[in-house]
Length: 335
Image (cartoon, rainbow, N blue to C red; front, side):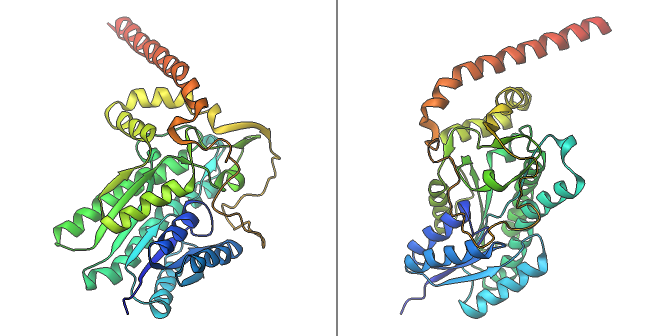
């Protein structure tokens, strides 16, 4: 009898992690599900079993190394040697940096960055002695271009990319056959926008174009299987990554104009709305993989995005021209 592969997915109770766990089970893997929300974990486990895989739910806060290490030990004891590990857990705060408390900023960094670091270290501790395995860290276009209102998340994703590059170089140096990859996602319709912390009085939303979590999950599973170094999901995402890498100044101008109001709907929210930053919110209910923007999730070809792009580009170009003119004026005044 051929052994099914064993995969660990963090952030598996909802969103992209939930969709990835389901997709991995459909491709012949048994799946260990790591997250804080127990209702979401149990619902995800049922989906894995329905897709033909064995499921193991392990309530885990990935910000704590000892919890991640204990979870990995339990996975190998109950499911078998870990063949692949997907680091997807994240947390964020939708707010200008001057409105983000130190505790909230620290927590977002610990979950999003240290969650990937601890997951990678724990996976490598088991994979390197066997000289096999695949680790996929989930990144973002916001690992290349920072946008307003998400300083904590962007900081963490930039750092995740640096951690990935350094660790991959170390594996290459020692000639390891363990594969380390990164998949950079676009805006995805997940529950994070329904339960993410915010100080703004309107409901957060993904910046269009918006993709469904199943699209992200497909690319993550492909990367688990083929070990490709990195993938950038979405045509517009690829353009943003290229612009952020080649023209960082223009990227700042574009983000300042296009990525503030586009992160919020017109729906008001209560200032005391509960958030999942420091504790899970499932409270016995399951959020699922999708957020509340199914009607807007159409990827690159979303009509609203195509209608707004020309004006957005025009505004960004105008702002850039004004910045250049102001710099020239200051240089002339200094002479």
